[in-house]
Length: 380
Image (tube, rainbow, N blue to C red; front, side):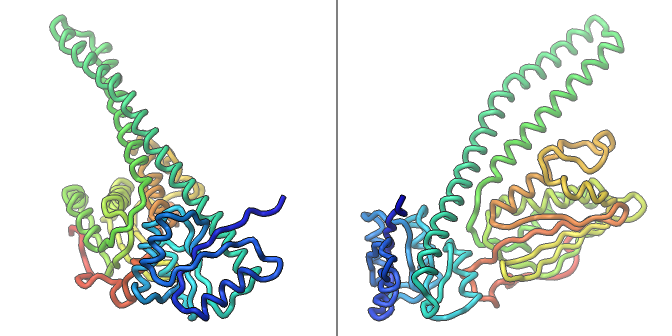
């Protein structure tokens, strides 16, 4: 079966460059691509409204748009189309910015070949389809979680009401101690089931990517304020270096740090005060974060599984919980375009590491928040 013909929108203002690219796509034995050309971003956006395309080739420099706004505007106009950025410069930082803004690939014009460009188009289309399917799956999961929670919350509420009524009526006739114990246990199970439902709802809601510019230092301070009483009661100390601005969902990012700090509090070592250190370093893909504590730590086999649903690293009888905290952290990080893992050894503490994309439209010197500070942000 012959491959399907691709229809590509080329956004290029330079006639010579456009002729070069169209020539590459129309090379002998490569007549599988039909190309439409737009010379400006405005013209391209109009074409995207009425035309049907499989991919977009976008020049880095256009007369009516700056590069940092071109990719987001094309992605917004045609969110299901893959975008490949074309440039005259072999610039890694520019390539990373393009990908962080929603492009699937980045190609240097002088290095284009018929085979290479056609292959890049095919790969970009497949990657975009995969991403769209994954986003649809996340949305379905969120809807499913909410539907299940709604169906279960009502009978659970009724069960708790009947337990309360039974306890009140039993008090009038003098309940046997053993029966009172059973009622206590039944109510504990209802409460635990409610916790599971709330955890599943949070897990489903976390499957929502974000593109806000988020000052991580501010988010960490908000998380510390939320946990201030617990940190103070534990005599905990939280230290941080200057933290950057990233592209993410602000609410989910705060939830991520709250979960990580809550875990550090729960599994702190009794023989020494808890110290948590938070810092970030820039790498090629964005920012690499580390949240280090001096708590109980985990056995090596537990490190591999604690990010799974309902997985626990420690005895649930000694440490109550439902095993969704780190699974939720993984869902948040991966949905925002990063990855998460941990390093730990029993008795020496745990380091949770995760990556997030940087705010691609900012210049490198702007990536650290202006008011980023270092030192103790927690409670002594």
